[in-house]
Image (cartoon, rainbow, N blue to C red):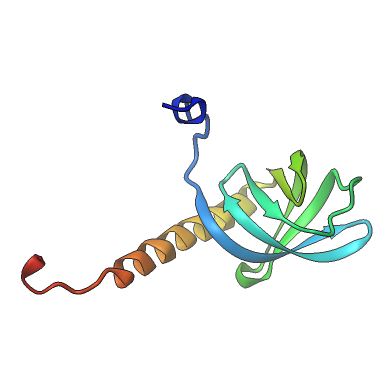
Length: 120
């Protein structure tokens, strides 16, 4: 068993994974990015043009009409991890977004399963 497989999962909130287009708004202006991992506490973003000094940003998820302030927690190349800073109404909207994304992925996985007559 590898070291990564034996590490205990520290996350306490549900996560949605995929590729959601977002705009990361920095002091330099908005830049397109992909949100690849999302939870109530934070997210992972893939952005090739994120400035090195972007420690605090706004992440705009236009598909859900949501804009959240976030602080950078880590960075590896084009990937970075962010912790959200928000109020209660924003948290409720974020919760709805996460469960919507999880449900969408589960539905897509179910639909992609081949039909087998008689359950075979």
